[in-house]
Each structure stands twice: as structure tokens, then as C-alpha cells.
Image 1 (tube, protein in one colour):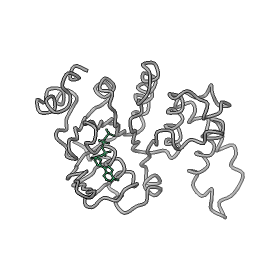
Image 2 (image 1 turned 120 degrees about the horizontal axis):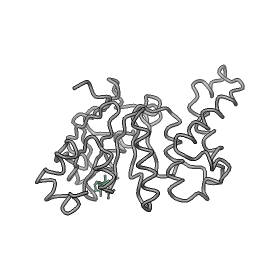
Image 3 (image 1 turned 60 degrees about the vertical axis):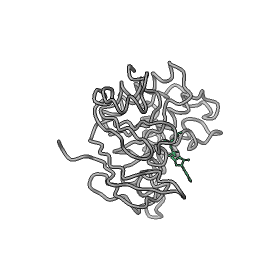
Image 4 (image 1 turned 180 degrees about the vertical axis):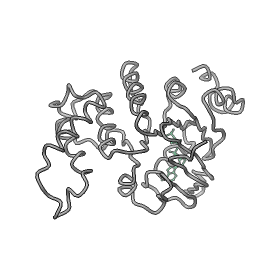
Length: 251
Ligand SMILES: Nc1ncnc2c1ncn2[C@@H]1O[C@H](COP(=O)(O)OP(=O)(O)OP(=O)(O)O)[C@@H](O)[C@H]1O
């Protein structure tokens, strides 16, 4: 198989008295949706924090397109092509959808904040903001106040903000949490669309969505990768059925 776009190798993270990430190695190939599943407390959020740079790893390597990310700040990782959704915490609730998108588009424009890079770039910023709105299906809500949007639409906006950096790998942390069926379906369709232009690492408890969307699934238990494979391989893995999937295996 071709070289992975993104990989972690031997990633480890301890908290006092607890090994939360235990020698985790995962690969994500271009255009793939790789889902990370596991019971509560298995270490999924810790792994995402290590990957996005919010937590320093004790050991191991994280590479994107052959570039080592370990030691880079969270911002530098975004610039390197790795964006993460923050479960709506990155939204300015009092501002309109369009202004949220404009701000994000502006902040990722190369040289915008540089004293010699300043010039009138309104048109470029607006165009990128509108593209982002269209990509996530918010073009009909540009003037709405972000904080007053329904939960599902706020998550769509959160994804759009992460897309402003034009990532090669997008980290989606429980994008369907707290959503009804219609909203979850919209997010599933959005993921199907995004995978055409980027790789996605998806953490999600909704097993229907995971088995529908993922090309590969890694099962995390007690901080370790218990199994990694195609949805069929994971569905038929007895150890995974016993420990985690149980009756959800028919998802
Ligand atoms: N900052 C921290 N300090 C100490 N222990 C922590 C810290 N963060 C997480 N843990 C512990 O590490 C383990 C893994 O937690 P983590 O939140 O990564 O699991 P998770 O798989 O994301 O769980 P959930 O599905 O419930 O979100 C848990 O036992 C948790 O209590």
C-alpha cells in the first residue's frame, strides 16, 4: 500500500498512576476516513489531544506527509495541515455566521498579519468565507447569529472554521454528539463530501455512523490499540465484540 499521509508511532502518555496512551501506532491514508472507537475512558480524547498538540506526548512520533509534528505547537500543526474541530468552543457566539467565517478565513491567509503583507484582501477573504459556508451547507444562514443556531448547525460552523486552514487531515471529535437523526445524517453527508479532498480521523460513539463512513477502524481499550482493520474485520473480531461492540455489532 502507498505511504500513509498521517501516522503515529509508539505514542505514549502517562498521567499520575495511569498509562492513558500505550504505544499507539495508527496510519491514515489519503482520502481515508479512519475511525477511532472504544469504551469511555479508553483514551480517545487523550490521543486526539496528543495529535493536535494540546498535550505533549511522553514518547513516540507523529508525522504528517513525512513531516515530524512532535514538538510543534498546536498552531504550527494547523499550519502544517492538521486541523481539529473543537466541539463548537471555537465559535464566536455573538457574531454572525459570515463574520465567524471571515475571521477564520482571514487568520489563515498567508502573510495577512505580517506588516509587509497587509493590503486590501476583502474580496479574497469573502470568497473563502462563502466557499466554507457552501462546503458545510450554511450558505442560507450567513446573517444568523452563530450562538443562536441550532446545535447541529453550530457543529457545521465549527467544521467550517477547521476547514479554513485547508487541512490535509481533519480531526473530528464526536461530530454527532447530541444530535438527532436528521442532524446526524447531515453531518454524515458532510463527511462523505469532505473525504474527497482530505483524510479524516473520526472519533465517534454512533456505531451506525462509524460503520457507514469509515474505511478503517481502530479500537482503543485501556489506551492500547486492541484491533485495527476494515469495518468488516472489526465487526467480525471476537475480542472486539466481547469487549466493546457487543450487540452494537450489527450496526
Ligand atoms: N489531564 C488528565 N489527568 C489525569 N488523568 C486523565 C487526564 N485526562 C484524561 N485522564 C484519564 O485518562 C483516561 C483516558 O481518558 P480519555 O478522556 O482520553 O478517554 P476517552 O476514551 O476519550 O473517554 P470518553 O469516551 O468518555 O470521552 C481516563 O482514565 C481519564 O480519567
